[in-house]
Amino acid sequence: MTDLTQLGEFGFIGKVDRLLTAKSASVHKGIGDDCAVYEERGGKRYVASTDALIETVHFKLTTTTPEQLGMKCISVNVSDVAAMGAVPQSALISLGIPKTISYAFLKRFYRGINRACSAYGIQLAGGDTVSSPKHLFINITIFGEGKARRIFYRSGARPGDAILTTGFLGDSALGLKILSSPRRAWKLSKADRRYLTERHLNPRARSLEAQKLANSSLRVTSMIDISDGLIQDLKHLDAASGTGSIIDSAQLPLSPAFKRVCAANKLNLWELALSGGEDYELLFTLNPLDVKKITKLFDKTHSGAVPIGEITALPGKLLLKDLEGRPQSVKNLMGYQHF
Ligand code: ADP
Ligand code: MG
Image 1 (cartoon, protein in one colour):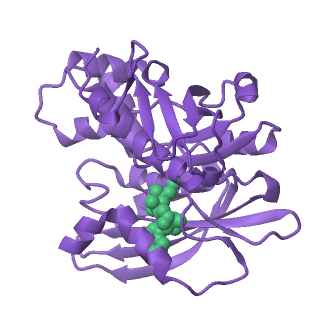
Image 2 (tube, rainbow, N blue to C red; image 1 turned 30 degrees about the horizontal axis):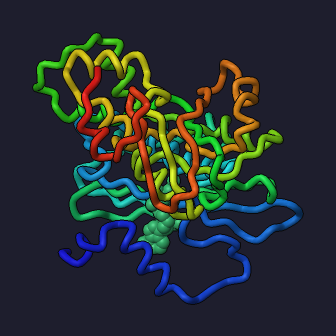
């Protein structure tokens, strides 16, 4: 495992990408984005993505209900389709089931799957069932389609573009923290606990928002979903675009519950909001002249999106302005307690 640890997940994927020299003309974009994108057909492009969730690594059966787990598996996959500006259509599932899992559990799990599929307008069209020696293993592959000219890649950001994000950041990471330390004397209301843990256990993919963007005339230049945390995913976007970024901390969208609970429990809110992960919000770049049009595009049924920074011409350089507007390195800001 040591050489893999050294390589890291993204180092490994980079090596794999270089090893896979076999190509098909039907693949327009392979490894390196939120979805694979296929050749254009009648003005459309088909996209596909796959995501695995493993018991103990991605979820614990003691903190999630089977319904929530089913919904989350679908949502995290829909989120990757949304990140391309595409419409999700169908999915396939593979299950590795250990002896400890009952049919009653799986029935409830599939109810969750069905509920999420209904909400996103997709059909679970098949899968595979095998036994697993110890832990529950779930893999879902999702398919979608989008207008060829309105598929948004990670690679399209240009210096001067505004950086925006939907929803709120950090809720999910804080929800996970609450679930992982049940014995800690948490200072928080029942409603805040429910909101934050639900944001972790049952995140909503921003599929409607993505489709609104794709159907608009707004000059969206790039997009990614935030699964690994704002900083990590912004780095992926910058790496693909050959750009850098400057983020203004004062603009980060933080929920009232998140701010309250971080303050009451003396938690470093920057660490959670910037690198917590599993937000499943959309991070996208936009021609600065179109930023004002965003509020009109998203009505009350949507999550909203706010500008949080700007793309720069310094490849790989990520700067964060602190609350006084001073540019800081990522490390400095994470050590920075303000609330
Ligand atoms: P996301 O966080 O959006 O799900 P990942 O970080 O998992 O994306 O993957 C980044 C890119 O690497 C994607 O294009 C994905 O398809 C590809 N990828 C990930 N793991 C592998 C693998 N084991 N072999 C080939 N490609 C992979
Ligand atoms: Mg993604």
